[in-house]
Amino acid sequence: MYKKNRKAVIDDGMNPELVRGADFDGYFGIPIIKKPQEIIIPKRIIPFSKLEKANVFEDAIATYENDEDFSDLLINPDDHIDDFRNHIFISMDCSLYRNAPYAVQVTNVYRSRAIGSYYQRKGIYVIPHIRWGNSLTYTTDVFPEKVAFLGAEKHSILSISPYGCAKTKDDKYHLKAGLEAMLETLEPVVVLVHGAMPHTVFDDYRNTTKFVHYPDWTTYVHNGGEN
View 1 (cartoon, rainbow, N blue to C red):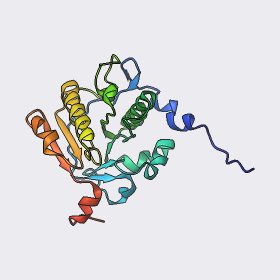
View 2: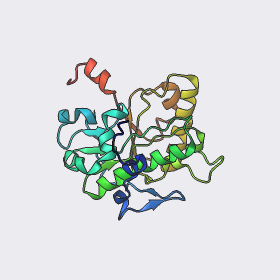
View 3: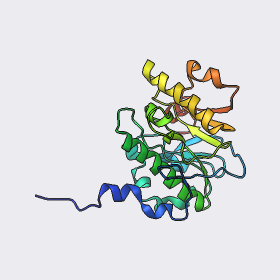
């Protein structure tokens, strides 16, 4: 029976060479994406798969799309360093499904910060993407640290993507609870918001920080943006 040769998935995903020279945060040792010297607010957020449409030094590149569209970025991050040198890079949006084991959720926070930290040390302007899963990731009810927020510094610029995460009552509960925990823990100066901003989730916090809204790519194109 034919068997495809491949590396172990854990080797492909973890890339230990990425964190040589990094600083680490918390008990789990999450690599830190440092606060930038200057807060830069991008004009647009462009999906990684649409990189060619991004304007130099104006737009941010993000992985707010299907995992298969940026899988090579996870496996071969070195191959894409030059792609981001003249752009803002939002760190990886590795999925944190609420029903996933906690170990998987911690691993995906680690992978996002590891690549973001690596690119930052390569001279790229990196904005941490913050993603939380179930309450284990954004509270200390069970574990001693809010793992979703490790590896991002206080009083900085952050990015979140509620896109597809506010469909049900339970979705909105965790979205709002995690947002409140993020604002309390990291006290960001600016939060980029990709996708919907439900009033029931965001209105209570509009005086807490500066939110900058960006439509998802499909909505942007539908409303007359580039396609």
